[in-house]
Image (tube, rainbow, N blue to C red; front, side, top):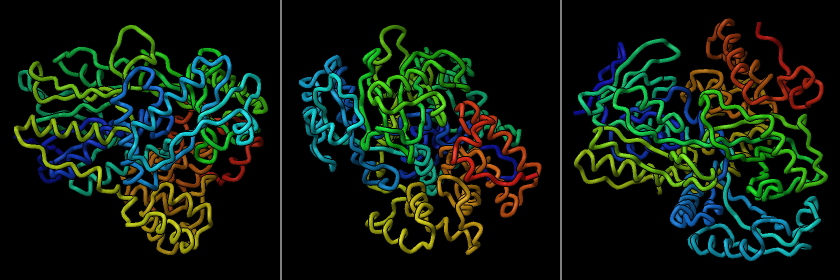
Length: 560
C-alpha cells in the first residue's frame, strides 16, 4: 500500500518508491521509475549531485584498468553505457582522446598495453569513437613534445568520454523525473526509517532549511545514499551488515602549464605505479586521482597536503617543464567512492561493479545501492527499477532511459542546434559556449528568462555565465541555496576562482530579481565561502587577489 508525504498545507501525495540520495544513481533511479509511471519521492540531505558524483575525475569511461582485474563484464557494460550517454546527453558527455605514454620502468609494457587496447576495442564493437592506435616514441613526441623523453618507449592512443559537469548529469536526470511527476525534496535529512516489525514502509526526515519534520511512506525504500549508505541504515534498529568500504580519491585543478598535453594523459605514477589522469577540463587541467581507504567523517572529506604534493610531483615527473608548485593549485577536492566493504586487500582490487542489495527476507521493503560508477548509472537504475517491479509482484514495464534524451538534448540534431544558438543568441562567444556546455537545448530558456534585461544577459563570472542563470536556477532548477546555484546549476563554482567574487555578484542579482534581503545575501555568501574552504582554493588566500587574474576580473562591490 502506497503511503503519504506529510507536508503541511500540501495535498496528500502517494508514492510507490522512496529514493534516498540524489546523486547520479539515485537521480537515475528516480528518472527510470518515473518514466515507467511509478510514483516517486526523491530525497537528499544536500543538493542534487552534491556528493561523490561531484568529486569524481569527471570521466565516462569503459574502465581500461578493470581489465587487469578481469572485470570483463563491467568493462563491456561501461563501454555500452558510454555510447548511450554520448547519444542521450551530447551536451554533457563528449568524446575525449587519451594517451598512455609507456616508459622503460613502467609496470605495464607495450605488449600488455597493446593487448589491453585490443580487448578494449573488441568489447566495444558498436562504438562511435575511433579504434586505438599505437604510437612510436617519435610520433608521440611530435604530438606532445612536453613529455619526459628519458626512458620513453611508445604510447597508445584511444578514446573514451568526459562529462565536465557530472552535477548537471545528475540534475537533468532529476529534472526529467520531476517532469514525469516525481516529487523532489532537497536538504531533506532522513532521520530514520519507519518500520512495522521487520518491514520498512517509509522514512522520517527533516527539512534542514525550514526546520520542519515530515514523514513519507511507500512499500519500498531505495537507499542510494552513496558513502552514507551505512549511516542511513545505522539510524534504524534493523542493524544489517556493513555495506560500504569506501576509498578516498583526491584531485587538484591547475591552469594550463608549460608542456601541458592536448589530450588527456593516462599515466603510471613513478613512485607507486598507480595509474592516474592529467585531463584537460573546463579550460583548466584536472589531475587525479588517489585511492586510499577512508574511515573518517564523510561530511568533511578534504584532500591531504601529502596527496596534493603527490599529484604535483608525479605530474612534474612526466612533464619536466611543467614546473608546478603548491601555489599553482587553484583548488583541490576529494570524495569517497562508495565501494563494497572489503576488510583487507589492495584498494585497487576492490570491485567497481555495483551491488543492488535486497535486504529481504531479513528486512522487507528496503534495497541498498552499493558501489556504482558515473558511467554505468543508467544500467544500474534499470536493474534497480526492474527489481522494484518484481518486489511489487508486477512484470517490469519497458525501460525508456536508453532512448529518451535528457532534457538538454531534446533536438533531432544537437550539433545543428548548438551552431544556430551560438550564431544567433547575440551573446558573447564565451557566454553562449558556456550556456551550451551547461544547459544544452535549454539554453534558449535561460536567455528567455532574462526578458531582454541587459544586466541579466551580461557575464558575471570568470566562466562566462550570464546573470539570467541565477534567477533561472532558483525558479526552474530546484536551487534553494547560493551553493546550489553556483556549484550545481550555473557551474560558476567550478571555475578558476571557485566562484569567489562571482558569489557577491550572484547575490546582487538575487536581491534585484528574486527579492532577497541584504541579510540573506550576506548569509548566503558567508555560508558558501565556509563550504568551499574544504577545496583549499587559492582565491581565498589574501595574496591571491593580486596573483590570479581570474579573481581580479570578477571583483564586485560588497553587497552590504
